[in-house]
Length: 383
Image (cartoon, rainbow, N blue to C red; front, side, top):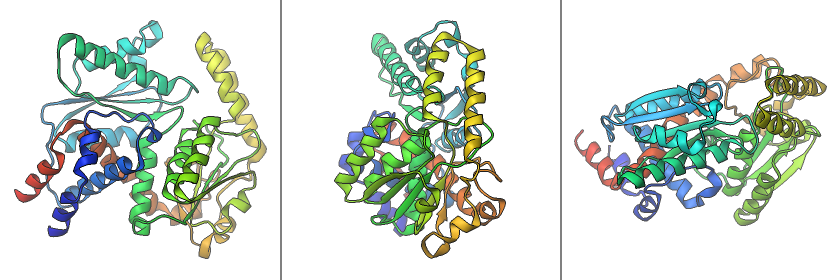
């Protein structure tokens, strides 16, 4: 294990110290060096796990997660991360809260934080609501702990909101670092809209990809039909990060052009921007009938672009005809991507998905374990 020992020993102690007690609401809240250290820790956890070295850093602690939207992979990743860290995972459905009865996000945070040692939240369907809920819930936890003189560190992890999906995009980045040997500068990644008949999906994965990959010095292409724009602030952030990293960022409305010569393609659906905004007012009124009507209109709008599919013809136009296909899963096979393309990428997207558990382990550990590097070295030496 000398290589793993060296990798753990090389973790940046100064950056690790800066991450103590931190929660992750958006990747853009953290510096690039902080994000790279986070991924370095995630890589170490991955290697420790593959070597069957247990990492029970938080025995007898409770790691709660709260989901206001459906999830399989992220729920599993949260539970897997908690179990590998020695904690007890508990996944709650958002419907089990008292939010619909008037309980505020701060009150929800206080109620959960009084018993938990970490909290993950997915709240992604309503623009302007999810990330704000998470920040308010975290403030409720902090206020409660301060009021009773409890020194516990209870970080909150964004398991997907309306703005970003940090655990997913950081898992994507971890997979790209492994696949391409670490240096992604100059690589071209296409984040493209793709047709879906299932539901009007959140904008957050696309927004998270453009605001993270532009920090890596990559050439980032965003492609979508007219009317499927992303939140303006995320576009501004992507442009700013590109200027800082020396990459490039372009937005277009031609899927063929976006795929041409790309090294990596990420074709995924999201809802029409104007209708996603209409959801906000309907949600504030609690108008469930209107929310259902907006959903139906969004799917009808999607049907105007059924030709936006990742197929064999488009994949052949990518770099050497063999771009890396990525997806956060589940993909709408036959609509977002053809069965043949998905089958050829089946193992790659599984490896991409598996990174999320280690990213969550890293997020929780850098926040909660003050001497993380020394603790990991000790676990390795005890082998």
